[in-house]
Length: 438
Image 1: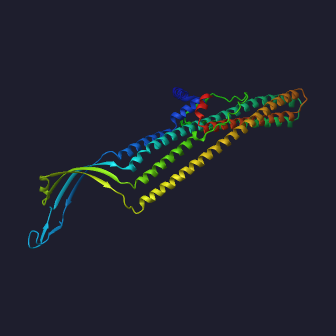
Image 2: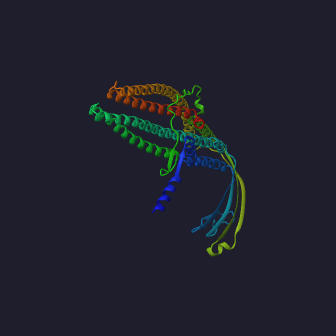
């Protein structure tokens, strides 16, 4: 039994994985299930290119038929041509087997030539979607990672507050036993102390939940155990925000993808127009026939034949089908261009709002940092005054509450600032470089 527990503990220890931000991002880019989808999309785009090319390659088919002419057709030779009387002939045999192979080669088809041009934008869209997914994975990973650090920082602050309040509670207990303070003063402090213990349990739960969210964001099995060694540098002055003043929406993945969609619609419009042009193809056929009125005897002799030729197909009237397809393609191209313009405006608005949000979060962060430093000084002064008997326990508890509120505000504003920074980097398409510089 002891050996089993030891082996289980050893196995669990071996499964523990330490992660920092860069490790988490790297794991996500290599292991998230969505990667397989986009890799497959790239492969699909390459296969579409092969499919489009196949239309201009030789097409070879083999065909075999067996006909049972139950009642053969009558051919009439008019009177006076061979005989003074009309002659009725029944040509052919009852059974006819025909085996042949045929090769068809497109010589000229402008619509198919235009279709080959779609290979480039199709492949580009698949590659761009993969790059966009990579940025999404980095963003989701970083967001989840920061959430873990925020909850860990909250737990750290609560632990420190618990320690300080426990020292005060110990002193007040002695003061109460000696009759220096009233029971109500001691009870107030004890209520605050128990409240911190409850908040610590909630913080631990939040840490566990955020760790699971992080594992899900990077594509790691939830049963795996991970350890985060990083911590937020809350004591340092936040760096000024890097605003995107020279933003160009054309560098955004969504814009690039929609631009390729416009190219695809332009190619499709060309294909629909060229469907009105003639096509020119060549063909060759080689086969053999076996025929007899007796089924068992028909395969005794085969008679081979061959033919080569060319075919010119001139579209004349398709019941307005080609015209309807052309108009649909024109409307789709118009819609694609409108969507591109809308995306461009939306992306510029999105970046403008991101800049505003980042600047606002930075201002709030600086303000909350100053309030936090001030609340620490107030609590330190009030604690000293309380020890000297100048300040009351209510003053001390109020100062402690103000500090906890300032800490909570600062932590929340720090998280908002970090996420706003990620939003800026993601919109600019530089989030990978940003994470690598951390």
